Amino acid sequence: MEGVAESQRTLYPYVTGSSVVAIKYKDGILMAADMGGSYGSTLRYKSVERIKPIGKHSLLGASGEISDFQEILRYLDELILYDNMWDDGNSLGPKEVHNYLTRVMYNRRNKFNPLWNALVLGGVKNGQKYLGMVNMIGINFEDNHVATGLGNHLARPILRDEWHENLTFEEGVKLLEKCMRVLLYRDRSAVNKIQISKITDEGATAFPPFSLKTYWEFSAFKNPTVGAEGSW
Amino acid sequence: MTKQHANWSPYDNNGGSCVAIAGADYCVIAADTRMSTGYNILTRDYSKISQLAEKCVMASSGFQADVKALQKVLSARHLTYQHQHNKQMSCPAMAQLLSNTLYYKRFFPYYAFNVLGGLDKGMVGYSSQGSGSTLIMPSLDNQLKSPSPLLLPAVDAVTPLSEAEAVDLVKSVFASATERDIYTGDKVEIQWSS
Image (cartoon, rainbow over all chains, first blue to last red; front, side, top):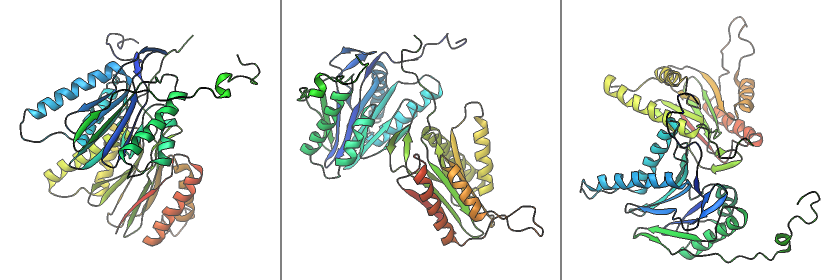
């Protein structure tokens, strides 16, 4: 570690958030995330907001290091503020914000000092829906539905089966709830306090946190290792 | 105990295969549209082909973020070239620029596997790069390579194909690669010019 030891950088994450799931629907974008903040494998914080509105047209969701997410929010606040000061009636849309984040993330990985996040950016501007992702090393793409972390394994197969272009708001929320329920059952760092936000041409709305109804009485849940000899 | 925390690498392999076939009066360039990481598919519709100049196209696979950066550098360099010389870059010039750009980062490389194609004075050739290249290249050799470079009198290095035949060949090598390579699939994007 000679030479490197002098500088401070994120070598591993401390407080982390779990998956974010987002979809396009008829009128815009829907995004869901739980509110857990894990300190290693301890569920340390239980009311962390991981979905935030950015400017007039965008929503940003983050998994990974919470403090890095807060730093990104400060960058974006400054970006939006300086853009506003031109006072030219222009405003940054989701495409621009996503592109900016892409460059920030890739630049930081080039400096071997990554921002430890996977980010989801959704938004609507002039009736144009946008949904994209960036991760800590700068990989980025757009799609009709995206998910970070374990959501990639558990939520996206469901979305590939059930997503379609003309989902209504109610259908979209139902689909996200289905994904979040699977994640709640199978992702050990997920907590049952979930936030859903939407963004349409009218702007962003964050709905109050809620809990999913769960059912744990399946016999396989009660004694999962019965019949698995040698297991505890 | 050794490792207790998540670790990171500045690289990833997002997979993908690229193919190009150039005949005397045409060039076909193709790549699949799958983008993966490990056993995950990130998206099924990501274009790996970039139009660098009027008669110069590049298909790239490897680490998507590096590929994006490479495409951006080449496009920017082409823009300054146009301003300085008032013309489009030729294909060999772009190939040299690609080579230099990659070597410039020799000690922190762009993890990108590229095929550059285009139209230039009837030059012929073919190539394949990326995750499926080990499956594709032997097929291309089999269909296009001359029996031996030692034959006298010398024969053409590349079996002449019509443009339609070349496009069909591209389709069939991708159909084969998709069967065995998990990083190749979903769709093929084929561009051709003549």
